[in-house]
Length: 298
Image 1 (cartoon, rainbow, N blue to C red):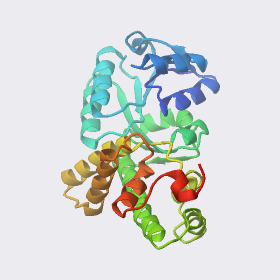
Image 2 (image 1 turned 45 degrees about the vertical axis):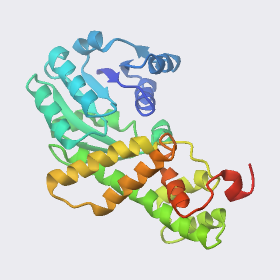
Image 3 (image 1 turned 135 degrees about the vertical axis):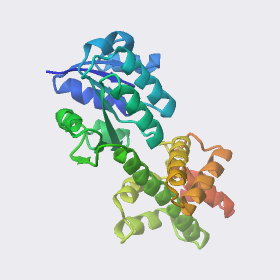
Image 4 (image 1 turned 30 degrees about the vertical axis):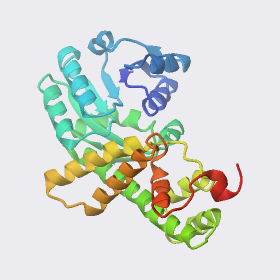
């Protein structure tokens, strides 16, 4: 059985690594956060310094916060991993940084599989992620038994950066959904519709997409506890707009959504769920945003 090291065991990485451990794979993990390493140890995972682990494993998984971390890990792999090692990265990063990281590793004989995932931490814990992969087909075939532990839907999209771009397409549409909701719900509240009445109707209507229905459970109670923060969505929107610029694809609505997210940050909601753009839109219409004011209950 392959020896695996998982780098980055945060909200998404920890449940993914845990699924592999529970399936009986030989697995060690590392993280730059001592707190996350402690949580991993509490979950029964073997914590090991990446510098010591990389030379002795067959497959490296990673879940990283952005381009800089991706390029840093690529440099470590190129310097320390054995030729033939497979690197499966699940991060949301720019296609340009991903391509640079792949070239760095491939020169050292490390295979790179770009394996983005769609879903939040609760879906990761339930092994219900959607997996999008691109890179060498042989790398995908080798990783597939492990990817199958992450969720029921897996797509191989091509031999280069297709998975990175597909993740940005998905997140563009998720961000736009929150912007659409912010305008629709604000219009309804301004005209006197009940907050929870609107969520019931929307969930049962033609616009009741899976993401809207999933959000309805929490947001109908005015609960903005984050599964993905405004700050995190702003980072992804920057990647999306950057990809649009690189490809000469105009994204005017996305640019407006980015500004709405900026407004939410400016109003103190950076660490709330990205759906807090609803509150930013409500404030612009002169509406109260407190739970008790909207629902009539604490």
